[in-house]
Image (cartoon, rainbow, N blue to C red; front, side, top):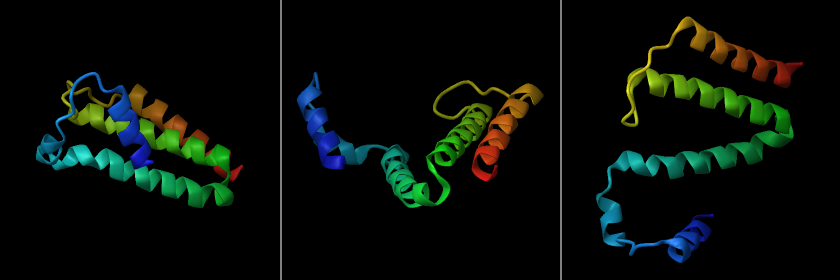
Length: 104
């Protein structure tokens, strides 16, 4: 997967790629690749056990939960947004829905 993405980047880059600068980037920027690899591995292992519907529902529930936390703490250079009762209730409904898909 990494080799394919590198090839696509090279073929579609509109400017010269400064590969020497890649290692000077903050370490947290590399986290996306690591987390992506963990997600793909987990999906491959879990899909036969819990099913595709449950896997997708749980992944979306995790994304909504993480999004609320990122918003709350103003991460990624965005303005902080508090977790209101409505936003928390919406996220909770997504999590409950994911659990219903998994267990019922």
